[in-house]
Each structure stands twice: as C-alpha cells, then as structure tokens.
Amino acid sequence: MSNDRNKRETITWKLNNSAPSPRQTAKFLTATTLGAMLLFLSGLTFTGTVIALVMATPLMVLFSPVLVPAGLAILLVTTGFLFLGGCGVAAITALSWIHNYVQGKHNTPPGAADHVEYSRI
Image 1 (tube, helix red, strand yellow):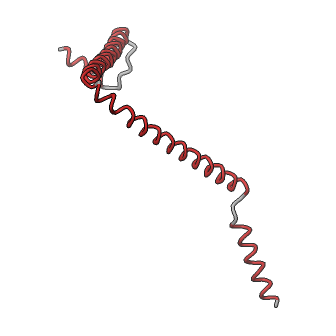
Image 2 (cartoon, one colour; image 1 turned 30 degrees about the vertical axis):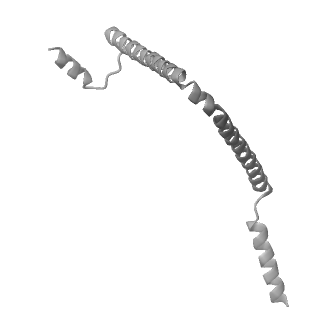
Image 3 (cartoon, helix red, strand yellow; image 1 turned 135 degrees about the vertical axis):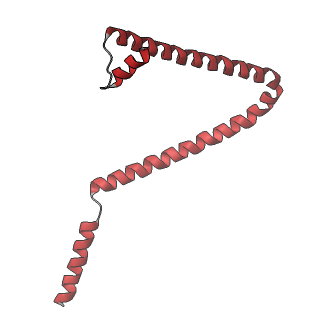
C-alpha cells in the first residue's frame, strides 16, 4: 500500500515540476491569440486584394494603351532619380575622402601609405 502511495506522489511531483509556469502559459496564450488575429487579418486583406483586382481588371485592360506608357515613363523617371541620388552620394563620399586625405586626416593601415606613395612615382 505504501509503495502505491509513493508512486502516486512521485507521479504528482513529476507533473507539477514539468508543468509550464503561469508566465509561460500567459505568453503562449497571448502569442496564439495574436497569431490567430493576424492570420485572420491577412486572409481579409488577401480577399480584399483579389476582389479589387477582379473589379479593376476590365478598367486596366480598357485603359492599358494609356496606362502602360505612363507606367513606363514613371518607372524611367523613378529609376533616373534613384541613379542620380546614388551618383550624388558616391560623389560626396569621394570628395569627402579626398578632402580628408589632403588634410591629413585619413586613417590608413600601416604600410598602405607606401603603396600610395609608390603609385605617385
């Protein structure tokens, strides 16, 4: 009889020690609830997008002779501005490096200055 009681106490003790803490349970429930809500909102967004696409397709086909060239023009203008910005950043970086080098504020690793001097010759 005593042996059965010890087994029950051991099993109860193991269950109590392996059970998640209240904090872990709250974290799990919160994450599950938020995940389910976000999944539901994702489904609603997808459904709305498909419905809008189905409704807009006839208009897009009807106005495609105007929309396609306009889209290409916008794409080219946007690409040009991005390229212009990248070239500007590269130029400012190069000028800043040249200015710092001329002022003697450059951080060159040991031995690198010898290569620069060698290239001047």
